Image (tube, rainbow over all chains, first blue to last red; front, side, top):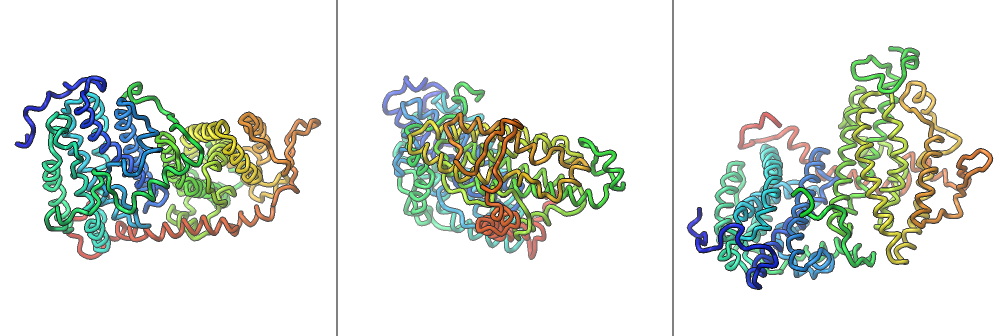
Length: 289
Length: 313
């Protein structure tokens, strides 16, 4: 247990349902959910670019699986935001691009053929995600606790996929060079995964998440840095403050890659004159979550 | 086994990797299965951009799953073809990227708008389903076996395509009109899916004699039109005046006026020489070249890996 953990925070699952929350708590819960949902949604949006374009048929199928898992997770988190009167339309399709709170890591485009980027990105992301979700297992908000187990259950496969590819590419000098280039470019953006929203203090004080993000960041670094070093890769050095990109994602600022992506994935919705997003699957509360 | 014996024994799932098949059979089966596998890959190519376009999260999930399934089908089919011992999967994928691999006529045309997606996901997949269902009884067992899984998944794809079509045709009038326009553009290509009615296929006689094909293109076309003309009308789509397609009261069969279809274009497509063929194959070639370095790196890792080689790769 981390010394930073707020020991006065409410007990796991003790906050009650969506209608039991006061305004301050509700705002904090929404902020946490928005980050979880947007990260998963946008990372999946980018992963799908690799479908039919991966290095092997097996890689195609693997990345397709992971994209669908992440989209499924985004669906679960957006659904919890819907408890507060939102719907998929205002959360995604008719949102403003500045409403999104995903980290900049997940919005960056892939250069054609840059499989090393996909491998490094998913490695950095999957470790982050697992740590954040672990810190939500004992959340004071029971609706999160209900769903986090299912999401965590699918994460080991994602991590193994990334680690397996990382090791395979690092075997080869050319592959290792490409991994290094991707790491140099992506690492500063990976740090934005741990950037706080303006609700961070409340999220921790209210026990919505059991660990603050800066503690999770150190735990993450303790895992990924030695592994990457063991593969002959150098993690960029320097203070986080110097490494971090201008746009932080979590505060609604994004890189230049975000708005074009947002318009690409929302334009058919508008072009068809849609006013609602069609659901095809049962509501997660009715399905076997 | 000689060809006469093969013809005498030909029946559903009769032959497998344990049988000593004549070269003529192995080549014919390879040609047929390779075409099928290539079509899965090139179909997925056309549909992949629409994962991004999908106007809801569930629709996006369904599209991503469909594209992934098609790649899985390609994988299964290349394996079924490999077992004939004529070509390896790598050879077949190389041929596809080089523009030598043949694939379904409909996948040579660009697809640019959401309203076009059910033309493939409902009509073309529906046509393919007709053919695939008969291939569960093909004489090459690995092919028939692959078809069990493929047909099961295709059933979901067609429902997905039908549900997109229903949404479009119950949407705003302008969207319905755009969908009708997309239908008119795609309908002749869909009719050509089964080839010309006065069957010019040079492969059919042999393929039928050895049990690889179990139904003629003409019978498949009749079955498709029986099922899909009423469905198109049910969703409010109108068949264009041309090509003329009608039911002949005397024979109680569908007639497709062959002169109304562009067969020069069809045969150009069949040679991979249509403008769209160059575009689609070129995309495949470029994206495959862009990841060539990955295949090189994992197949023959060179120069100073710092970790011990993973034995279970």
